[in-house]
Image (cartoon, rainbow, N blue to C red; front, side, top):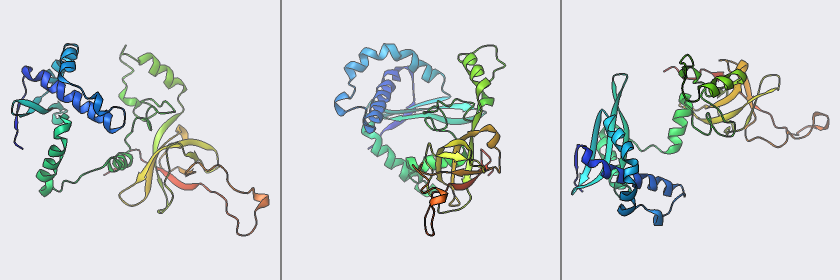
Length: 277
């Protein structure tokens, strides 16, 4: 397959809109929220394009660089970059699902000499967990409805500004917030994996929070993140995790006899939120 990569123009707006909608449908289909019968067609996309035109124009006008991939006059993919802190970053890249396998194989082939390898979602999740980065539904949002400050990024919200959408709600929630996400590491290898929702205790047996994420780090230890009472979210604080949320401890102490087993939490320690490389 041969195709052309060239700078995008305003005449390409509908073409990139079509690619974007097909890519979005492909994503929904992969997670079971769409079927092949729902696949968008040109007639329907043409009818709704005017509604999205402003978005696509903004998308291209705010780009540092905007490129399209074209095959026999049909746009099959597009990308754009932006300048942040003086660094050019690839901010979006979309490929029509019909071309995704070809695109994927081409990337692997081009990057083979550079050591490029396929990275699955599990690898991505362990990487961001080890780096102390949040995932929506775990360290933000989710059943606990954790906000930006709960996740440890409150300093990025500039409350000194007189007004912005959500400012009042953020300030009000901060008045009652008592916890924050911290990173932890189990003190021994070969322990059971912790999962979202597993309870966390302090050295006196008091419940101080819950696990939000956990993965194996580069040294073979299990490391994770947990939403903890702020007083406990201090580096080098010992904590204890009940992996798997056991339904019972076993027998009460008075009933124990030689050889009986009881469920104990696994020791861990709070480490710096972001690893020092």
